[in-house]
Amino acid sequence: MIRLHDHRDWAQRQAACHAYSRHDAGFWRDGWWQLHCRLVLAHPPIFRLESRLANDRFYAFVERTWMLQQLPWALLFYVVGGWPWVVWGICVRVSVCVTGHWLIGHFAHRKGQQTWVVDGAAAQGYNVPLAGFISMGEAWHNNHHAYPASAKMGLSPCQIDLGWWLILALQACGLARNVNTPANLPERAGLRHIAAADASMLTEAAR
Image (cartoon, rainbow, N blue to C red; front, top):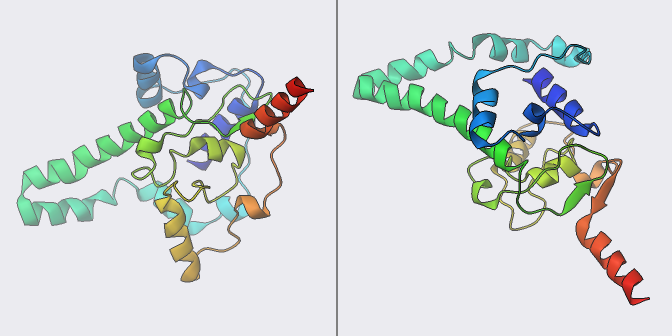
């Protein structure tokens, strides 16, 4: 998952990138591409995971066993409610999560609220307020493009970010450390605040 995210992030930072990576192929085609296809580049970039990630046994275990992790839940659901519970609790749940992740990614790269623009980047992020609560903060995607290394994506008081609350809980338990936020991150190259830019333009026009 880290490798896939880094590949997409690299592509979106370029001056031009394939429509696959910027979700710019239309709704149905983008859905087919993202859910059923894989982009293969003739000259792909080389990604090397840091040793602390590549050699992390927990990450390796999670990646290797993610399908098997559904079995205990399936057994529990079967005992509680039989096959209907298994179908809804496993099959439908996984399908909704995967499809929902694509939907948020699709709309968050097409249109919506913007506070920031990254000059020179082929793909821009947009906030999708309707999905902010259920997406664990992922829908505040304009903020994510502005500060991609930030663990906190809901940057204003009205932007509910359940993922950030979870990270705070993990930090309080000692399970998360060195947590990054915009307060301790350098500004991204090319980042431009739209409101500030508009104010500057109005000032120049007034002169």
